[in-house]
Image (cartoon, rainbow, N blue to C red):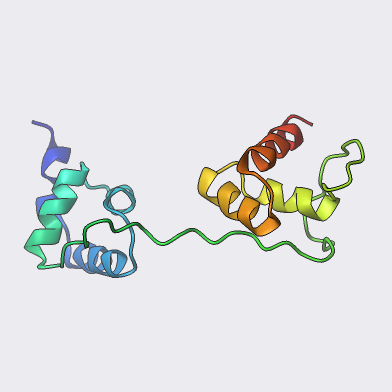
Length: 132
């Protein structure tokens, strides 16, 4: 077996405290594994039990990632949206909001709901802007 397979047994007190803090903040086991260098999700589950942390309730989902708000006007420090043919709905401000999602599906779906547009339309615009 590799040395990494036993990484969960050699967590320092600081790592254990960070594990507890991340667990309390609602981070997923996958996020905790990546942050602490634990070998796998099952090892993180064993650490969670060893530290006496409560299990997640059935159907629990991690907190949603913040969605970039649509600004009224682009700021000077903001990135410039690529030049696109004129469209009645897609303004440079909305294009910047779409680019701010980085194509991540949860952020795109939240932005689509905020804009009142279908998710497919926002994803399509993101791909157009990415390619421009």
